[in-house]
Image (cartoon, rainbow, N blue to C red):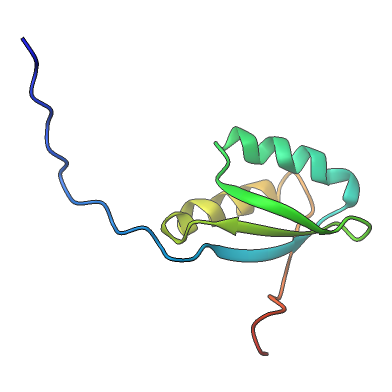
Length: 92
């Protein structure tokens, strides 16, 4: 006999139209370990290396997971020296 599935307690939010992004800088030698930490967090964000010589990365993450993302980044600052850079596409 098939069991009935329980209904969700609340509806899921609609998916965001765009990903949020942030630029960070770290030592180029730390990029590989950063990748492993990110994979351990079930790929909480995706990153692209913007400048491999300066260690600048562009991270894209879901707006729904902003709190989890910034908790991860703050915890990671204890392991890796990370500097958050201003977004070049937003006017100052």
